[in-house]
Image (cartoon, rainbow, N blue to C red):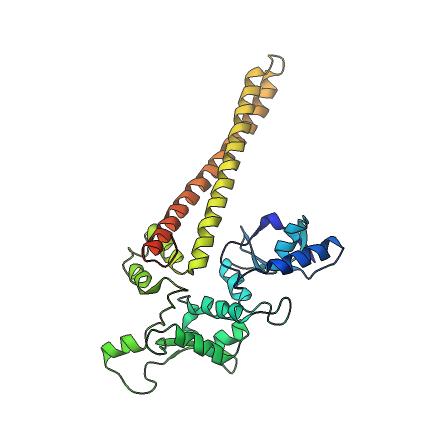
Length: 316
């Protein structure tokens, strides 16, 4: 079993599928940890850069409260989206029992996602570990008028997964009616960005435009996920700036030592110090580039949040 420092685990990427953290349970877990109790490992997904927490948010909070930082972990290879998909079905058979709000949040996480929303009710129910009728009810609630079915749905039968075109099921509507009746289900007002967000997405620049890619990535996030992303980007930006400052100080210190080298060992000191200075400069440039990337992503995320606030989706 692996261990991980909870300081390395990211919890702000929309991978939390519960409606809320129960602070009373966190406190009980923390007391148990201090008393020597052992808990199952948390589950994280590693994408090569970040560790995304997918299961064990109450345990994570309890470890932090108990000031225990090296914790058991089930570390899996995967992306942030892999962690989100895993989280919607977590705790169905273990841990703190899920509430109806927890189940609703899990289902709506998939219904609010452009890729997962086209899955069949049965597949979403399987992923979220809920009844198919529950998914159907939430999908109906997300529609302003009546249940809407996407033109293509991901269906699994007989061990085979394929795309099923549902446009011809039932009566044959006129072309303009088909676009309305079989369009992607519109998310409920309190959970998604609404039709205005979808319209904004359609008006994006060309696919190879870096700004368009950022906007599409942000548009795929739920409102809570978007807010978490902004918070996470700010934390990453502060961390990158701190690293850049530290490397800058190290470089300046090495250059000062280089100037103080005596004539007796000037040649050797010059070579060693110059190599270390070059290495530090390279690291500084790397961190500065990271700072620039994070500042760019942060600006785009904050602009998106501002758009949602203007649409009164996110409280100002």
